[in-house]
Image 1 (cartoon, rainbow, N blue to C red):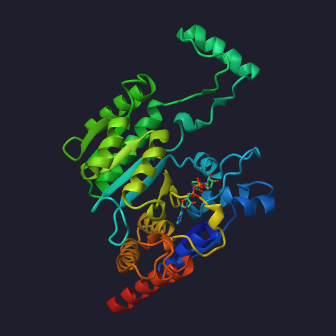
Image 2 (cartoon, rainbow, N blue to C red):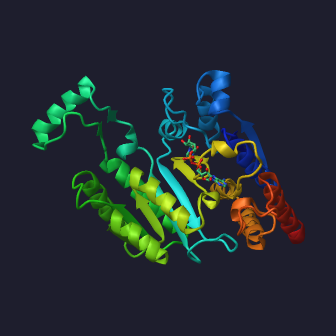
Length: 367
Ligand code: NAD
């Protein structure tokens, strides 16, 4: 069966890592009909917008895409392509597996956890009011009278919507994901002792949904501050973490740090019957075009894509090939070497080629 997949190279280091992933995916022999579409700087040049309607429509039609990182232009009025894409396509769950690999320096061994982040609401909803503007002052006045709190007249305000529906959807997603992937435990993370209504609702919903999984999963909840401390002390106590948007953003970087950094952290944004796969890291503009950065995160995002398509054997082969190249530590990028100036470090393309070669050898050996 041929799978149609939209390929969005992105900008900055995006095209380099996205092509590295595409080469490795092709090496698995899975038949993919690639449809390339622009986003980010390339799209601005061609269409005057970083997220053209054509690109969105292509993803809507194909239902699956892999995307390189995209720069968020500062102060130009463009929204973040990443946030817009998640919203427009209702990709409500962001899934970020974090596991240690031999050969990747990290403070821990054998960490294997998954961060499931709610993608559509919370302080990320973009409902903000700038300090000093007339309507912000008006809002402050109103809030003062409603809350009886002494809010500074010049305060900026961000709004944090948390709904029962979105909390329930993400908790159920995390629990179903845990069951499907043979995991034991889901930890819902919140700050319900302080934000009694927003995080309180998230906690209450998590507990209610958790009850439905009694006997099949352990479902617990913890405060976000305590969770941060416990993650860096005892990461092995965690399995699947389910979080509202902002805590999810922060803890997924923390968890990426536990297993060796952004260079090895893959991700997926998933909705109902639609998914966009991308690395956790951004477009690292200062490295663009240098054939220098680590393609692992993007290649592992490709393995998640294969899994999503049901190509489980190819996904395992791709994961194993990445693990083998990392373990050997020879054909790896500078950031994976003990000394970042090691002249033996290879480029992005060469590391991807080494992974693709392991995949081809593994296919040849099994046929
Ligand atoms: P970044 O992840 O792009 O880079 C931070 C640093 O991490 C880099 O300078 C580099 O040292 C390191 N790094 C990142 N990826 C690496 C890789 N593959 N190999 C080796 N080292 C790597 O974060 P930033 O500098 O905060 O953001 C740059 C731009 O990317 C911003 O415009 C931001 O909005 C955007 N961004 C996009 C996405 C996305 O497209 N999903 C995600 C995050 C940030």
